Image (cartoon, rainbow, N blue to C red; front, side):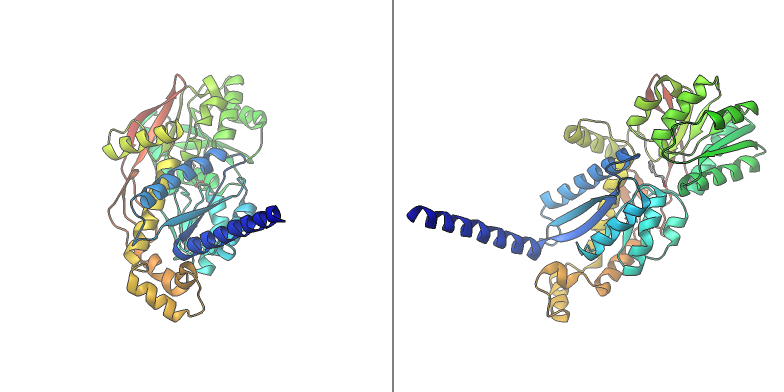
Amino acid sequence: MKRSSGLWWGVMGVILCLFIFSCAQKEDVIVLGEFGSLTGVTATFGKSTQRGIEMALDELNQTGGMEGKRFKIVVEDDQSKPEEAATAVKKLINQDKVLMILGEVASSRTLAGAPICQDAKIPLITPASTNPKVTQVGDYIFRVCFIDPFQGEVMAKFARNTLKVSKAAILKDIKNDYSVGLAQFFTETFTGLGGQVIAEESYAEGDIEFRAQLTSLKAKNPEVIFIPGYYTEIGLIARQARDLGIKVPLIGGDGWDSPRLVEIGGKALENTYYSNHYTPEDPRPEIQKFITEYKTRYNETPDAMAPLGYDAAKIAFDAIKRSGILQEQNIKKAYKENPKASYLMEAINTPGNRQPIRDALAKTKDFPGVTGMITIDENRNAKKTAVVVKIEGGKVMFVETINP
Ligand code: PHE
């Protein structure tokens, strides 16, 4: 009898603690959302971004949060699939009631989530989606990276002026907005510079066999092959191209960037080049400090998505701060306007409060990011420097920096 009543009190105690804890959580925490590919064909995109975002979040919370409020970020895995990306965004908005959202890396997946954010007037910042259509979805959609008309131009100029070739072939992922767009922008500049795109072939994400396309490209004798895809396919394409005796340079864009690329492609990746958002060889102190911290935490050199995720989160925090919605008088006002609200997020997460965040984001100017100075332009894009890197001896090496 005595024993069982002790147990009863124990259980009640635990329940009470959990209740108090959950109230405290609801009371104080500002909740943001993130969706990304933590698993699937582009798993490193989501993982690196998440690590970068987590670093920014920890930094904020460890320095006292914002106006005394702690932040939390709910992360949803979309398994590298656009349909799942849409589902993830709906869950973040409807179930987790987030104030704003960070993500995705792949343009097609950001494009799947962006209209949902736009309709709900939830500000979205993509750290790394470069297709122009992304921010055209509407005035709540932002990015902190450059766009593909620039990136395509960078690689077309590199091919024409640095590699000094005039006949290019293209192999693109037909189901991927990023790949299709980048192929087009590359072609525009390359032909504008007097070059010729003499052959074009396509594949679809998830394919593992590219020999038919490569054989037909080879027959046309291109001097370079532009492959604007993601790392998993790129690794395989490079191997099969070299097996078929294709020796010309293979070039691409930021989608190549992954610690997995060289693991998959191995020696086949010698004589390849791609454009990217950052290089760990950049001596700028902001970058070197970030790399040191990242290595201490995750025991790996960060790819571009990690600092881009970090910058996206920092810019989100900065905009929330400048919006003023967390200032004491504004929180009081929010509770007054929403008398039924029983905790902070419920009171402040209204369209009337998200608009000032949107406006603050739109006014982001000269923000000192790890990936460079970030100014959001009138189309909610960022103008930033690109780098060209090459793979040599299994290592990614810096070649040149190109300013917009
Ligand atoms: N820019 C690519 C896209 O829009 C995504 C990406 C960014 C991939 C950075 C790798 C590095 O789809």
